[in-house]
Image 1 (cartoon, helix red, strand yellow):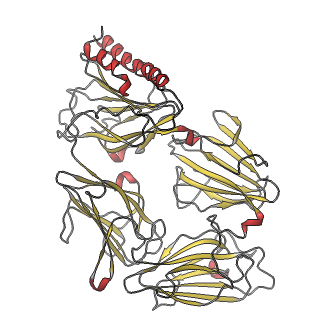
Image 2: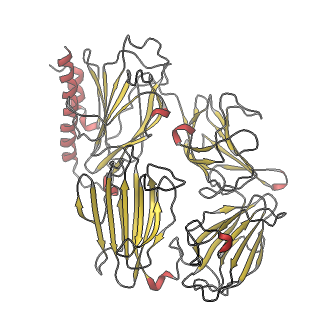
Length: 633
């Protein structure tokens, strides 16, 4: 028979929150119900932040996150610290049920069994297949004697699952393949989106999918990849790993893109009215996949737009040699001669930029399409082709980077207050075919391309690469390396200072981390952390460098003050990081407070319908806890 606490909890369902106290020696159930409002809330294991470790002998605590109709559950672990595996077995564990409906029972199969620390997690963020996620927490009693493990904490939110629905028509789908097609008609939308299978959940293993696009005569197709997270090596693509191939035309004759790993991709355009995308998954440990948009563009307007889909800003005529100072033109656009028509053969153009002392010049390419000779191979030597080079040291006449072909370069920034861009069109017996040249934007920047925080101004009004983030202004936010997401400049030292209120700690996580080589010591690019305001190393935090996953870069301050320092030297090829910070107090309760039952604006389901659905969903969860207790007794 149910006790009073269970009955009381059932009658509290309209508040969309349920907490069932421990019923005898069985399961404790904590249910987080969607309120229909956006935003993330917290969850954590018992005693987290209030004691040095979680309790022993917990048979079962069932965390249930139940969304509304057309909602997906997203959970992200901020910290994870359980007893590690013994003989390849988890003694203390957290089981994740991602594919279950609102109810869970004894026959439910979990997708993940987690233990250990942050580095042992297969990923930090998980998504539900339907509208609910369940987590089963268990700790051993006498099998684990020394318990110095803190538990776990994270955030959860309910997001609209309709945002992840492919707008293409599904032709076929089974366990090992899927196929979609979109044909543009006069009365059909000119834009849409498509995703990897199960997105935003991890895509399945050993699956092949195709996406076919057919434009109207006089149109081409443009693809923009918003998310790309595939299992495999980002630096070198191989068909032995998960990958995406994109072909122009109706047959696999002209491949225009080969994508893999986890990286940003410039917009991709077809040359004809047909485009095909093929996705292949081979590995058993998969990731989030991809999210992309597509758009049909008229060929008549293509010449007026660059590879970012922005209207060309180049004034005519396009000057071939220019010296530009910050005072004369603080920002502008440079294009190749005759842009966007084929440029002439046998010319050299030089553009030099001079910023004020202490400031930098940023170069952002928006279009890049240079002629390639028929004699080249896939591993082209740009010195033998039409090319654009960037020089960052005025004392040396040697290019720091050189580009050729039609791949859009990343954005770049000067190491000091000078930079040169040089275009070389080699002599040719014929014309340059359909090569339309290049377009780039230049900006003189005081902020080093860092757009958050309060910048420090040094002596004589010179801007410094030092940025302050104060808890009284913003609790959660982002910060980046200089010039992110482009290549960070060489010989640059930046620091980010975080000041919290008394009793707060600062959590720093660096996403997309790519800083220097794997050697952090000496004159090598690296990032360091310190809880001290004075100079000198903090022995509690070692410097990090190379390419690293977000879980490995996470650091938590000892107190309310934290500094992050980035140092670059001679490298001019890495993209830095996208940082996240959060000022957080110590939590003193096990469950979150009861949220407001106010629903999301614009929701079409009635309150009565939601209440009935929620009552059924949570009742199944409660009954599962009661059944488990009755079996134990």
